[in-house]
Length: 171
Image (tube, rainbow, N blue to C red; front, top):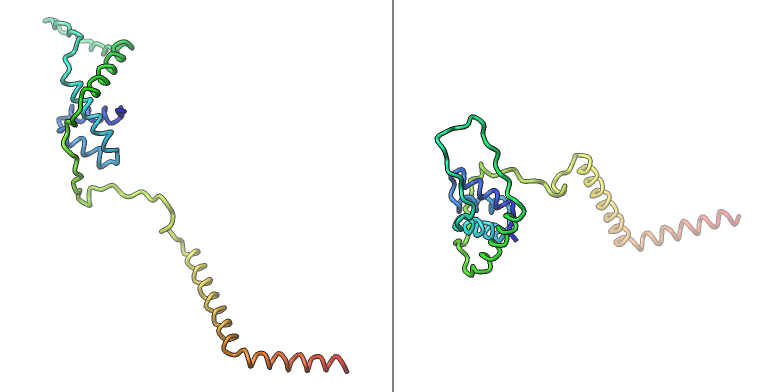
């Protein structure tokens, strides 16, 4: 399906005097799909090759100071144009354009990247929280290691405390 936005942009670029390949490359670098760009360029080329059926009125010597309004195409003309474009696409078997190869652009001309996630953005409060949690983890790991290495001494300490404590209550 032809992307009308791309087609309009290609027409505008050609009207400014740019080459079709350069205009296509601009759309490709902007993130548009390669196949949509090629389809739009093919339809633009087919449209330019077709002879127009509407005859242009002959110009006269008299120049009017009022600029005439541009005539809007009728629905019938629009339907006919779309029908011709579809027929031309069906007839066309080979791609008209060569393969698009992205060209490296200078770093200065690239637009700034948009941040999609907030993963890299941390405020100082979050950093402080991470530091506190890391210290708590290290503290708890050291307690666990102490219990593991000194389990025999801790068992005897608790046995002595409970035996002495129970004897205090029994008196």
